[in-house]
Amino acid sequence: MSQNLTENDELISDVVACQLVIKQILDVVDVIAPVEVRDKMANQLRAIDFSANPAGADPVTQRAIQKAIALIELKFTPQEGSTH
Image (cartoon, rainbow, N blue to C red):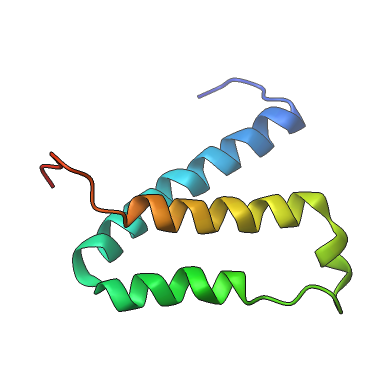
């Protein structure tokens, strides 16, 4: 890879790489974690109190937490016809 990427391209590349790693981790958790653990993961994210933290006012942080909760819940919701 001898491409010169812009700073934005590098950032996007980093995000995609993190998403791929997270997907692999979730696949492992999906196999080894009981439902109680999965529920606890989502509930811990919901319980974060950002009212005393400046990051709580950050819409990017708020959206990231919402996406994380949605990812956990969607990932761990049994789907009919699933073969894995």
